[in-house]
Length: 510
Image 1 (cartoon, rainbow, N blue to C red):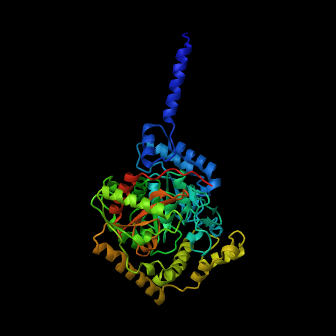
Image 2: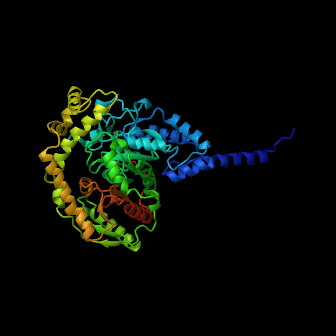
Image 3: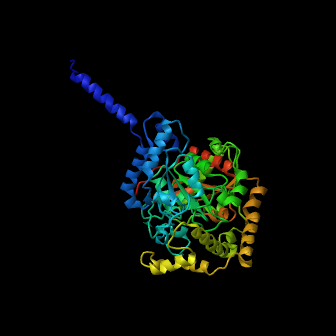
């Protein structure tokens, strides 16, 4: 029997170490493409990936409060994906863990709750997955869990923090822990930023994707209303609600968008109307590194007005970015104004406040009545639940004035119709008129400053990381356009991202 020499043994040992090192997968800033490459090379399984993210959630979530619960079936779903991969099944999201905002329903049989952050819906059961979740599952994605959010999408109280929920607590910004992470898709943005999930989904009625995206240095896509199904999502307004991805890169966000768009019989009117905007071949084809070239982009200067102590620094950063965009071939039209923007930004003058109250009551009552089981079946029930559980819901501190005002409405009457017509007119005479007259492909604004303009018109927007203030808090650049303009917005957002490469992992500063 041959005996291995000590030098041969050492060489074999080092070779095994190298092989093991090559197999190790770097979770930090992992992308869909890097994950799929590791799957294909045999260096990673979906189970291993899910375990890595679960470990990271366990180590960081006590600090960040970004994840409200993990899916007890996540490893089982990952195992199924691994078996499917062996039989030849694949796709960009196959085997990839996705974290869902806690207002996006999953079927009650999976053991996950869907509560919008409220104890009132704890233990309720949805009869089916939300429309976007059905599409994710068909693509082979693994549901990792639910992300914390501003309770009831920040539509209960005027004074509750925009990233607090009774169930999940106060979520924290991973860059500067004392800073606001914004909401209502706070947990989704924090989780993407801090690498607690591969990709995440959020929802927006007015700013709830764009705002947490810029404050957590991630990419957020607010799609044209109706491009993604709202079926099975705890609503605020069927006129303004939309579901979109929050990810670390434009490429990842676009690949998720490709999976979740399309017609849904359970949200038929809106998804049928918007399906005409979906390009043949999907959205990934618009990930063009030269996407800024030839684009006419309007700078909305009033939305670059900063009140912070480092305003001059931020202005200098944006001027540098504008210079980069020009170098990449963009045609920038400066100092543009949207007509009546002050009125649009005032929810009382625009009519948005009046419309949302009535729409919320109608939409929420419809959602609750469709649940297979639930402790509450109407907005009135939720109000009473909060009264009975005032300590858990911090009722004395935050109240529920928006709920009470909404409950006092009685459908869409003359006042509400007038408010909706006013917003439509403001949109047509505002952004739409400006885009046409100046022949624009997009407008740009800092952070989420123009979010309401995009919200009331159902327009799309994409937020991309743009920098970090002197205090370390991130800020972003938002590209917005007319309904269905996602292809051009994606080209510009991707071109900007690739030209600047601003994003960096969070530092968890106190």
